[in-house]
Length: 125
Image (tube, one colour):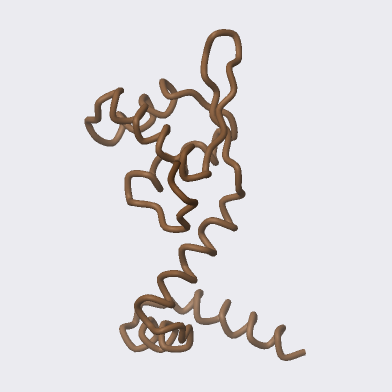
């Protein structure tokens, strides 16, 4: 069994987004949702959901002869772990470097800048 891994591949993240949205789902449900945006094989989805279960992101129970998958951790917790891992790997743990990069590349909209300012003001109180 693989050890839990905080980083999800792009395909794994796409599957987890569907699982989080539905909270309980089957391979067939995920397969149908993914097929709306791109071609994918049913067996690929089944394999990837098994891998996500092995990594500790999903649990599986048998319900009326169907395997039902549920997330083991909330979306925000997983996204937070992925973001921390990204900042550690790319910015050597310096989240301020990420903010400077976003601000200098004009990646923040005026609305996002106001939100960030408000959050910083609230944090300083």
